[in-house]
Image (cartoon, rainbow, N blue to C red; front, top):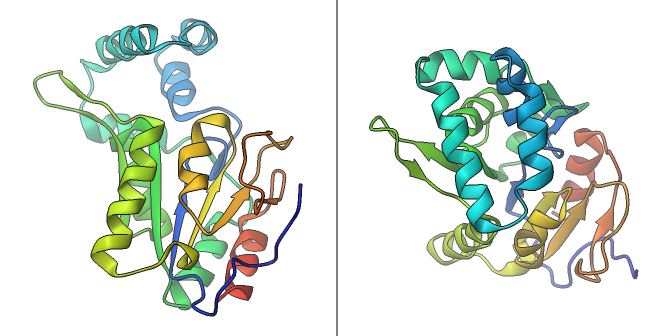
Length: 216
């Protein structure tokens, strides 16, 4: 795959959108961390392995909600906080914030966890699947990440080449295709990735931040 240091054009990166699971978190996903704390890890891994279509994913999320119903959002955030951050996550975000670059965390996982990590790391925007007080679910899917990014470009008056996106899996493809500078931290490149993708497998977030700043 052809690699590019920076997207074409002189404008520089002004917005970075990060995925959460596998990108800013390493090891167990948010759902696995929660399931481990609740004694449901084996079942969670079974769901992750078998929920490959929309109907199965909807049923899986509904089942997870039943595990959480006896816990407050604050308690669930405390559980999610046990997830392992990627190396250099705090420092890398600090570099970007210091440079005046807006950061968003866009994830399909539970919004209460995404919100917590956004606050901890200094991201100014985030999206995630919401768990409403009445038990209903406000679903976020991979395509919603790219839709959020495209909407943000319009409201901020940014061009595509002023945006970087960082992901690790097939579910991040819509997001990566929406960005001028796509960065992939998964172990192996996917054929569907943009040709401009920079591949930094399991990267320290400080290295990702330096790449982005070099394009600023």
